[in-house]
Image 1 (cartoon, rainbow, N blue to C red):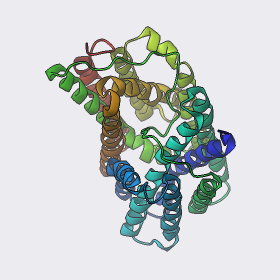
Image 2 (cartoon, one colour; image 1 turned 120 degrees about the vertical axis):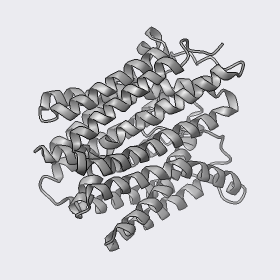
Image 3 (spheres, one colour; image 1 turned 135 degrees about the vertical axis):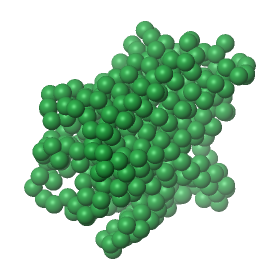
Image 4 (cartoon, helix red, strand yellow; image 1 turned 90 degrees about the vertical axis):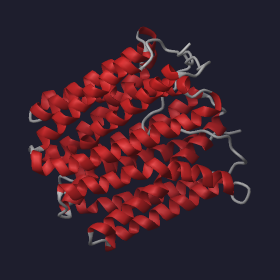
Length: 401
């Protein structure tokens, strides 16, 4: 079966380009609309909260409807509804208008990626090298978008951001109609919006062969560690651009700094086998969490120093990239076989969903009253607590036997 390489790669470029509009610039756009930081935090928290339940709802909907409508058709409908929901942004005037739009947009947006992941893996027959080469275009799309928009918004108003996002959404919808529908697909679940950890040279993690109190403690520690990790990223995803703008950085510089974080992440994914061969998963988790704490401390105290800020952005490779790789391996250990879908849902829903929502909300209510330095120092403290949980809660070896 011929793989529609450029159409699949194009989707990832467009999809992550859309994320490149939201992460660095949506907070700045809301600020331009005269929203208080508390409201900005709450709006972004709602967007994250959708990820707690939406993927499971869509997975169930796809399973129930596949006898009536093909998953590809359902994905196309979700894309159209996402586009139509977001058009309402031009009529939004009140906080609750924006809240409703972001909830609806986030709900339909969350349906698209898993369907494309399934479609891609069916086309490539689980050839992970081909998957990585296709998925890489997602990172390229993000880097291109944040760099170009950062430069553009130094010359034009950021009020054009919704129009750019709608153009990307429409391109995603058209791309979906350009792909042929396939038959019944196998179940897959991916949780990350960043390049997949797919290195065939790394041996698969050993599966659980027994259950007990120690296993339950390890799983609880793993979930809590990731929940706290995503709480610490809340201020970054919501207010980092606003923080830098307040320090005098141009929009182009802000876009380049976001690009640098993703570029560093790609480098770590490229060398992921090296890390997994030389350190245990527990050791890597602890190292990454300590580096995360250092990153937030440096952001709190030295963000006005461009050289130090560049170094802190490179630490994104560890605070997200490498730690995500470790988490994917742990899911294979804690949730073997068919249980892996449940593990993926917990990791995504409680980590990225609930953790991201809590982090965004807490950052919003403390940013104005306590200041950005306090928020990032608090994030560093939470990262250190997460590292202690990793020290005492995660298994010392890469299996539970």
